[in-house]
Image (cartoon, rainbow, N blue to C red; front, side):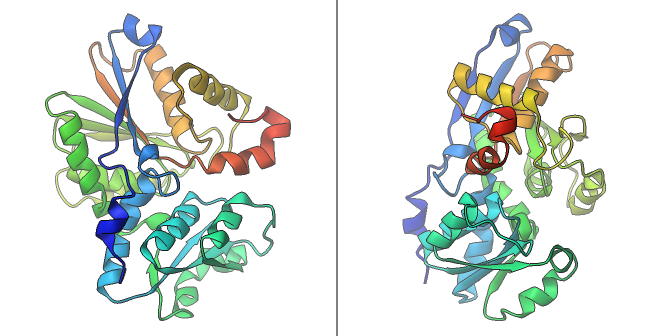
Length: 309
């Protein structure tokens, strides 16, 4: 059976916090911190471990030896699940959206090197038929795409416990990139009242507001969803965003992925310029990892935008 105590020793928990200093922040009397979930583990980083932990624990409790999950060809979730399963001794199966898989795809190459069996299905079947696909592997414990289920959301409670210790007394504005909504859904259910949450929607998914309301199990902390910084939708970018990512790395030595965290940090910078925040606000940005996606992005777009560092 998987030994979670041994596995946990490979993780940097609680994740550290880095303060960011800029002339802009100083002029406006603002404090900006980044909760470095990207440093939890080199391969199982960011919110991926938070969403996987309780699911993998449940699989172990049920005596399951195989994990089945879903994702796109460049999925951070597929990458992290493969690594987590290898660390814990599970077999893993990744159902990948799209019938044609690039042999040079760094995400899937990594997943296979970590023991994950890759199964490609048509986009239509992937979208409409996940339940029957899962039934083809009755021995496996199924983790949904992105780890987005109740256990994934409940996994955020441990992150909330860390945030409460990191910022015990301050009024905090916590910014979170939104993909499936699992992370922000868990956070708003567990965070205390001295936190307010601002979700930066990176998917151009206008239905996320309704989904969040359906997941709320108690009187939540204050939260809102901002739809202005998706750069065209999931995995969409432009020269402005790529230049921002490289500039941020040069100034602060912190890598940002092009899908999630970079859009959130760009939003913070823009909102500061527009005086969205109040003087003396404590702003905390959740770095959700996903740095493995830089390789895939560069493979596809470096000729157009230049490489991300």
